[in-house]
Length: 306
Image 1 (cartoon, helix red, strand yellow):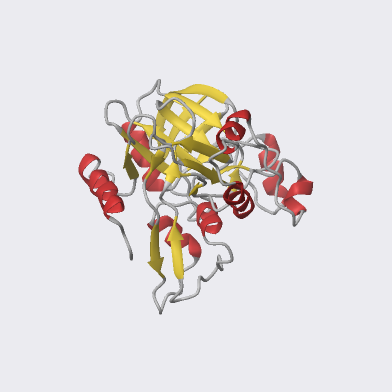
Image 2 (image 1 turned 90 degrees about the vertical axis):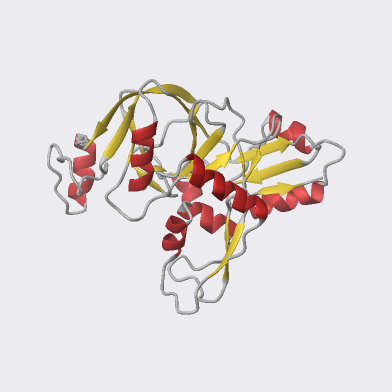
């Protein structure tokens, strides 16, 4: 595995600041005016590997979609032994207040800014399916927390499961077989940030609107996030930054499909250019060819365009 000095420093900070949460990817906050954090890692898949892509995603705290974006053409079932995999650990922070929890549905990541720590915790998430979408453009708070949550599926959910031959009880008791996992942070009246009883679905649209995390990740948040913490939902497939040294970066993710037609289409979902993105990327110093390449490739990693 190749790792630069900057990546090693990031890892060292993660281990020393939050040593009890070895699974969490913790970044030092960048200098004032900067949004660029972390550094990508390249690994070589062992010659005798028979592991699916999800195994490598889990090992490096990535979502399935993050790995697919960064490694176009990779076999999701059995990545070729001996081949290279890029772990996209370099990111641009969202254009939001650095407070509480930020959930960016488009990149399927959760950002947590612990008070007074000068760090940000970045965790991969699963989000709502089309028709039961995770909220967007919403600010709320963590209203309560529960270890060992129960799950009360709606009548519609029970009908959907019944149509596939699975009968759900009115209330699924707490425990390892509960789809909500072992910990939950409740936000608003209908939604929660919770765990899972499955080993897949992180980085995919799999839930009925809630935010799903791997077991260790939700346990970490459960232990660290106080009730009353601010939670902001955004949907930003394109992030941009003008760094203190004048460098301009763009990070492009595949937008979420908005309808069945887009899901079934072989064409990529169209990108929407916001006023902020346009302002940063139309500067005379920007190489438009680099911008066009980044927009087409959608690798989910920061690309310097000037």
